[in-house]
Length: 298
Image (cartoon, rainbow, N blue to C red; front, side, top):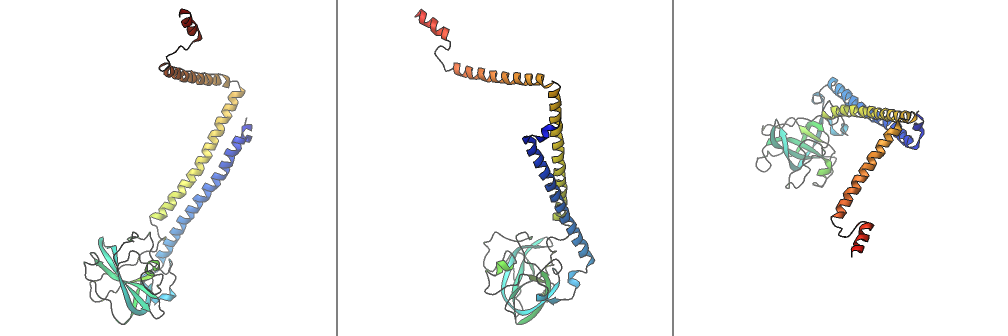
């Protein structure tokens, strides 16, 4: 009864099922692993002391920025140089902009330093001047921003002196010196009180955020796909087996006859419709007898 499984048609179906089910299981397992990694990272971060409470270390000792060093206090010594305003940044649900200065260190590289946040729009709000001379700053270390970072402006077309994304890739085109692939945000913004400190952001790809639960949702989807493929295969096998059994018992003859009759009826209906369309345009006789009669009377 199941010899049909060895036919070329079913070889293709079986091959698809054999490849599809392991692939779906693999993808579901991979997505589950991503979710578990995020859970473990979240648990580990909760057990660690807050990054801002740790002792400050030189910036070079904390690079490159990763999930462990992100948010750690970093120190650097140098002189403030170019200043940029970063528009479209919110703080406490208020719109404003960051004040960013490049700190030229003794190594020749410059560290982007966000001195604070101001409400309003750049050019319409007075910006406190940066300290002069050599300074030592301590700020929370942050990784370079990317297109997925909240508040980033990737459209371009900003006026001179404004920056859409805090990253080394963006700054190297604006300044004539090397830039650290990181930045710091100062929590001590000075005595003026105009600038508000920008809190350090949680590193991307960590914690139980929306993306973590998306991984969990994708896990369920892949396992459902695997079950659906298996269900459809059993359903097709059952239908094929029932058809083979009916054919063996002679029950398919009547069904085939009805199917052929329906097909013939459909073909006749189509032919009649075509004939009707032709009759509307044909002005001559369509039957040989009619032609003979016409000739006789003539």
